[in-house]
Structures are given as structure tokens and as C-alpha cells.
Image (cartoon, rainbow, N blue to C red):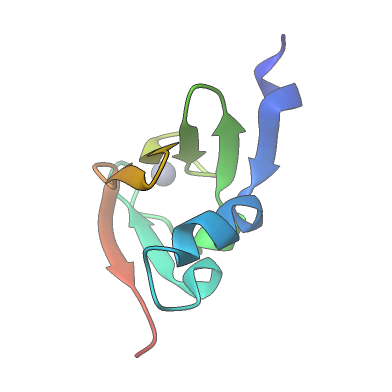
Length: 87
Ligand SMILES: [Zn+2]
């Protein structure tokens, strides 16, 4: 299966991420740890597989990985240099 067939944009995971973050996560602005581009989470590329992978729309860097199980969620933002949220 082609990776593009599994791709959505970051808005597709808004509900799942809002279970953890009590902010409007799709408008949070992340800075890519590789290329330095800044984009709202809603503009990231989302790939679905065993978990969810959010990739930078500019350089394809893995920004975040999310795995959800019954009642638990594991989140890594290893590829995000900074995340700006409105408070
Ligand atoms: Zn990037």
C-alpha cells in the first residue's frame, strides 16, 4: 500500500489529542526540529498504522508519534523543537 493512501492532515487526530491537551490542539503551532518550519498541528501530515505518525509538511521529519490502547496513550514529540499554544 502506498504511504500517501494512509495519509491525512493533522485535523484528523484532533479529537484524540484533545483527550490529553485541554487546548485547541489543531491551532497549536509546532516548530520542526529538523528544518525549523512552523505550522499549526492541523497542517501536519498524519499517517496511520500501528500508531499515528505526524510528519512535517516541509521536510517529512517525524514530528510526533501517538499510540493509543484501552485507557492509555503514549505520545512522543521528539521531532518538535517547540510547541506554541494559546492560553
Ligand atoms: Zn521540517
